[in-house]
Image (tube, rainbow, N blue to C red):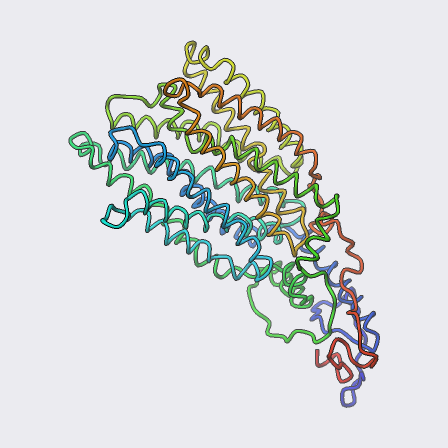
Length: 558
């Protein structure tokens, strides 16, 4: 079978030192040998991307994913400021609880849906096909939110909640896609830092929301002093600004290549995935139009039966339970506080004023102080230390520190406020710091590492959706409990409830393995030698392989 006119094909082993190796293999009548060749090639090329030097492509991947997360955080947390503005414009400072809850919960609910749907779709249709679609949803829904108005058919609040639900679906899709794309392109040595850097843009998104609010308020100061109705202009501008980073990132997301791991492990095209790795590592972005080898191979496929089989094993199930529970309990506190910073600042007297303009100004300034001193530094401590200390140490440290800090704030709430408001803000800022130099970052990183390629996005989506379920629970609980006994009188007990959830996070973390300095394949809990196998043949005719005849295939035609 291996003659081509007068030339005889020379067997080429994938590990042979050929300078410009083009992956044209020698296939003979033994499919076991052919599958072994591809199995070795897969492991060899994945080791290359794991051990590659940090280069421009890695930076580009972080920027493209990071700008999306900047937009996610801006759009999610800006409602914390906008809700208060709406309160002054339409409700004389007292927005009904059901409307406040609906505005803050709609995006979180949409995010939960988006994480599950896009997580599954990215594993079944590809990361590249989904990437950009979620950002398009965010851009369209942000524009819709900013242009909402009362009408005969639907209220302003109903329109806002609808568009923020759609916005949430797009934001939810960004979580598993950005995490998985970054982890699958990352080097083993710097994977944690790359994923943390992407996630750290959430801090800048939160900060930017407060800064844009402050700038817009300053521009409209004289008009607002004369007529508070001009705040209606302010909240629309602040909300609509979220379009800007999304539009800037859209083109780059639509043109990012498919990850080589997905090409190899799901599309079963080992050779194309290998060429893609070479293209990525040489800073090329060219499509070599080579036909897929017609050799039939067997690789574990993502099916419902296989999903149940994989996660029915305790060693795999406990990881999914650990990542999901940890993210759930973290987000109860993270969103319970993050979406209600303005209420907390008002409760402690920082943002309370009879002057509408000064109240909104102080609210924006307070959010900037907390974000600058606690949120942003916390993220970047994680970036610099996650590949030195490890994910589990940082997550455990964060949960322990948060348990202690919330206990202090909860039990000594009134005493601290009486003694010193700056002291309260300092402790509150430390809580923000250890959320982000702790479980808020690591609960994002770990699910993008611990599952096999065919379930990596689904597993991350399930874990992230568990977190957003915690956010929904937190918002419902916060608004319904905070005024028990009088306005904001239950705040200290709410903080103690957050402490209890942080304590649970300590124990759920113990179910998760350390992922530092391990390849994604090692973390998948699956044997990598023999991952690519000869397909099972039911036909007695030995010349037929899964319905394809390879008797005419030579090395020059592959």
